[in-house]
Length: 262
Image (cartoon, rainbow, N blue to C red; front, side):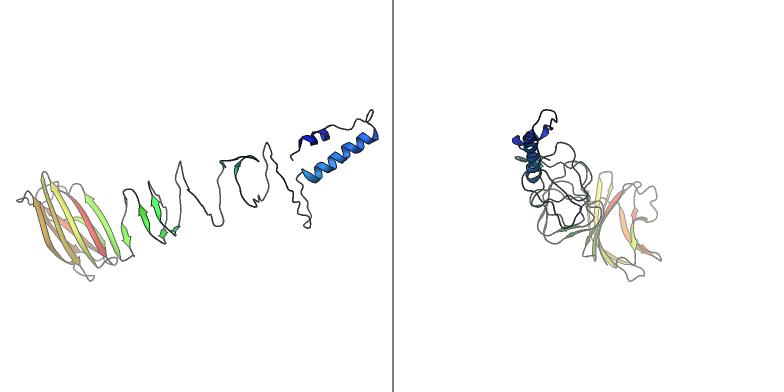
C-alpha cells in the first residue's frame, strides 16, 4: 500500500491508558479514510472488482497469478519513466507488437518463423533456425553470406561445392559433385580448377531423364592460355547424377557452382 503525508498518523496505535475516546475515534477514522483512498484491496467475490484510483509504489517484490496493465507497462517510478528490465525468460502466447526499435544486445534472437510485412533492414548477423517467410521486400544493408543452398520458389537451387585436392589419380575422372536424379532434371555448371599458377574455368549445361546425362561445355578460359588442368564430364548410377573432373596433374583443386532446376 501507499500513503499520504497525513496518513502517517495511522501508524500510531491507540494508547489505552492515556488516549481519550475521541482520540480513538479520530485514529479509527484515519484508518477508514486510508482504506477508502490509498490501500489497494482485493476480494474473493466476483461482484467486487477492487478498483482503486491513484498512484502506488512497492519497495520490494510484488506478484500475482495474472498481472494486468490497463494502458502501459513501464520502468521507473510513479513520476518518471525509465527502462523496464525483465530478468527472467519471457513467453508471449499472443501477438507482440513493437512500435519502435527492437534490439538484441547479447546472445541470439531465435525465431522459428519470421513474417516480415514491410521492409526488413539487417545491419548485422541474422540467424533463423527455421523457415523465414518474407511477406514484402527484404533489404540487406551488409554482405549476405549463405552457408547452404539458395532455393528460389523451390524449383531453382544454387549450390556451391569445393574440393581442395583431387589426389594423385590422373588416369580416370574424379567425382567433384553429385545430386539425386529425382531432385533435379537440369543444371548450368561453372567449374574453376587450379593447379599451381594455372587457372582454368569451364561453363556448360547438363540435362537428364533419369538415364545417362547429356552435358555440353560451351566455354573454357585458361590462364595462362596454354594451361590444361583437365576436363569435366558427367555420368550417372542408379540414383545419382555425377559431375566429374579428370586432372592432368596431381593435387588439382576445384570449385563448382551449379544452378539446378527441378
